[in-house]
Image (cartoon, rainbow, N blue to C red):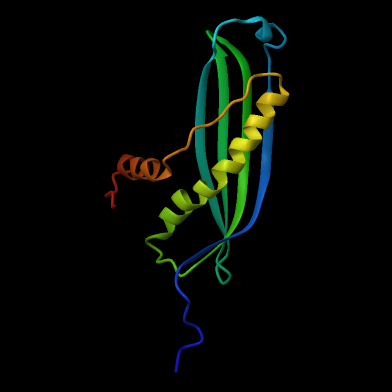
Length: 153
């Protein structure tokens, strides 16, 4: 007879995807539109997370993406989005949970954040901005190494 409390194996379910915060600034407009030079574009990523319910396995994960376009010392635009997700995670060992939270969930959130950033930049009058895919596994391993923790594969 099977135990009714036994889980069916690991699962990661998306309950909700949403924009938690959004910001856009273009301090050099309209002069920026007269420039012929290609700006330098920088992208920064940050992951925040919290557990909302232990019994239900609900976690909020927020991927913050900040894009800054500069020409020499002038900022042409700054776009930032905090793309949030509500995830129901079950059957994952506690030592593997950080990988799910910092690799699996951001991989789900990135395409949504990419779309919001592209829309913001385009509506600001600038050319389309496509954010390249991100290797969240490598970023996670770098974070572990920086904290002096062993990196597992």
